[in-house]
Structures are given as structure tokens and as C-alpha cells.
Length: 200
Image 1 (tube, rainbow, N blue to C red):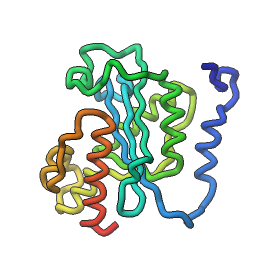
Image 2: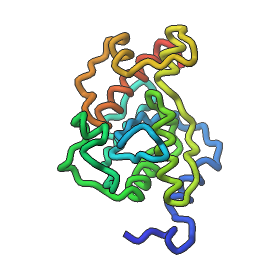
Image 3: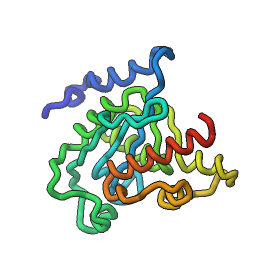
């Protein structure tokens, strides 16, 4: 695929994404996108994204048909990667190059509020992928289910609770936690429960 930015011009998908944040339209009900990713490690500058799973939440429910699942072809992928060793990445799934993966992700999330568990690393992984394409950083507002859990439990701000432990506390089934999309779906269930408990 030939990408526009190779010619020195700003690609249309990036212009479309940025333009979403130039309006103050509060008429529509806010869309949240709960997402998760599998990576080759936990160093945002050295490691890369292997797969992304995302699902939309509107109001008090999951929009089951509004989801994204994308596997990214990476030169850095090896059997030593974290995700591979946990059996998370499906080696038979069709993969796209990183640039196409970022296009799909931005086209899906639009101007939604991004939600994840301990979300900062995932956000930085996306920002590093965008940087490799000579593009800017994500502009979406963020929510972290770990921070929401801290708030609900009255825990110190620097407390890091695993998604599994939060699921146990909220009595949420963890059987879907085998892929990025499964993790995103589980996190969406966590988000909805915490959203109700905190009243947001």
C-alpha cells in the first residue's frame, strides 16, 4: 500500500482524526472505546504492538457489533515475546502492517473517550507507533479502570491493581482474557460496573 505521507503530505486519515477535535458538539451521547493490546514487551520505545482489541460502550451498555480486532505484522516479533509465550497471539490470523493498523484504530476510535486498565502504557505504545509514521500523538480523553477502582475502594493514587484482581472484586468472569479483544471485552464489563458504582 502506498501511503500519502511518503510524498511529504499529511495523510487524509490523520486530517480526519484531528478535525474531530475541532468541534464542541455535545449533542450526542458520549461514546467510550475500551481497548487492550498485546505487545512484545513493556518498553514503549523499544517494543511494538502485536494486536489491538477494542469495543464501544455507549450509555450503560456494550455496543456488541461496534468492535475492532486487528493483528499487526511486526519484524520484532519473536517466540520470546510476552504475548507469544502466553499463547495470546494467534499466529494464523491475518496481519496488517503497522501503518494500516494505526489507520484502522484511529478510524474506529474517532473522538471517543479511550478506556483501558493501567492505560498509560497502551497509549504510549500507540503514540510511538504514530511517531514512527511522523504523525502526532493521540488527542482522545482517557479513563483508566485501575484509577476508577482506586476511587471506588478509596485506595492511594499510586496503587496498581491487576485486571484479574479487579474482576475478582467485582465478580466478573475472566474466561475471555486470552486475546486483546477478550481483554478489552472484560475491561468493558469492569468499566460498566465501576461506572455504576461511582456514578459517572
